[in-house]
Image 1 (spheres, one colour):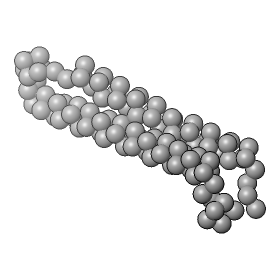
Image 2 (cartoon, rainbow, N blue to C red):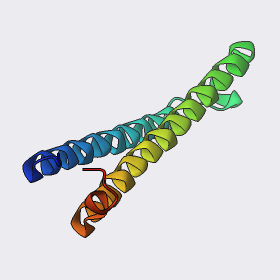
Image 3 (cartoon, rainbow, N blue to C red):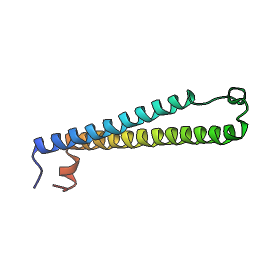
Image 4 (cartoon, one colour):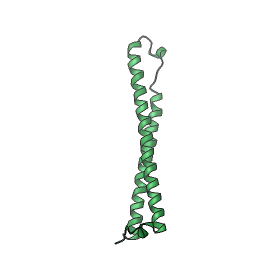
Length: 103
């Protein structure tokens, strides 16, 4: 039995909303990446604290790399969900699910 059209529309809307949520998360992580730049200091700025500077700089760089990685992956998930939603919507419009006997 085929699902009602309003159920399909509702499900596609939910998928679209979730996809946008992942993309929004990506934007927030990207902002975090940018904020790390404000926390980076040169050796000169650290003055006599050269030993902690090495560890501090490494930690800031590591955090920035994770923000970038997370931002990229969240964006990829959002794009994948958008592609799924668009494909399903197009197939539904074209009657592919009905023709394949899926319902």
